[in-house]
Amino acid sequence: MFDLSGKFALVTGGSRGIGAATAKALAAQGAYVVVGYLRGEAAAKDTLAFIEAAGGKGEILQIDAGDFEGSEKTVIELAKRLGRLDILVVSAGIAIDGLMMRLKEADLQQTLSINLGGAIAAAKGALKFMMKKRSGRVIFLSSVVGEAGNGGQTAYAASKAGLLGVTKSLAKEYASRKITVNAVTPGYIATDMTASLTDEQRTAMLTGVPLARPGEADEIAATIAFLASDEAGYITGQAIRVNGGMYM
Image 1 (cartoon, one colour):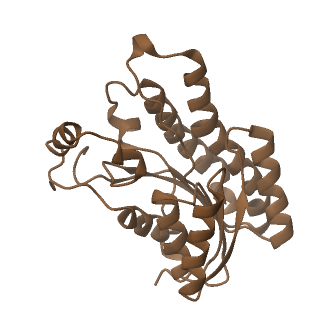
Image 2 (cartoon, rainbow, N blue to C red):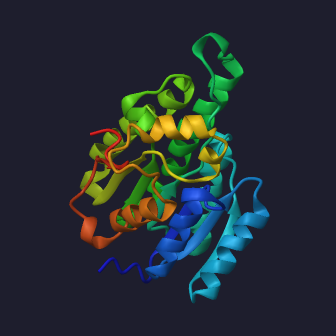
C-alpha cells in the first residue's frame, strides 16, 4: 500500500520540520523527491543525504515562496526538466506573531505573500503538467489555527484559513482531470517553529489537547504520504485534521 514508485514529488519547505519529514516519508515509499528550500541549503542537503542513505533518490531545489512569478516559473522549469510532476506538497511558510494592535502591514503582506501567495503560485505551476497527464496530487500544509483561530496570530490564521478556501476551489476546478487537492491541518507539533515557546506556553497549549502531548512531524508526514497515494484517489477538497483532538 501507498507505493509511490515512479512518482516525482516536490516538497516546498522541505529542508526542516514537517517538510523534511514529508520528503523522507515520500522517498521511503519510492518517490523521487525534490527538496525545496529558500535559505537552508545545508539542511536541505542533510534531508537529501538521509533519503539517499536509506536508498531513495532526489535532489534539492531553491524556491522563493515570497516571489509569485518566480515560484511558478521554478516549478514549471522543474517539471519540464523531470518530464513530469506527480505530487506537490506545499510546506513552506512563516509565522510572524503579535497582537492585532501591533500588527504591521509589512508583516501581514509578507505572511500572506509566502503562506498563501507562494502556495497558489507553486500549485499553478504544477497543475499545468498534472492537467496534461490527467492525474496528480496537491497537498497544502494549513494549520489548526486556520480553523480555530488563535490570539496573537491574526495574520498567520488568515493565511492558513485562506489555504482551505484554495484547497476547496482547486479541488472543484481540477476534479475532472483526476487531480486531487487536499490540505492537512496540524495542531501543536514539535518542530523548530514551536521550539521557541516558553514552558508556560507549552503547558497552556497542551491543556487543550485531549491526547496530552505534542504531535510529531512524522505523524503529519504519514498523513501526507497517504494523501499522495493511489489509495487516496477518492479524497479531495478536504482538510485532514491531525491535532490530537485539539480541534474537532
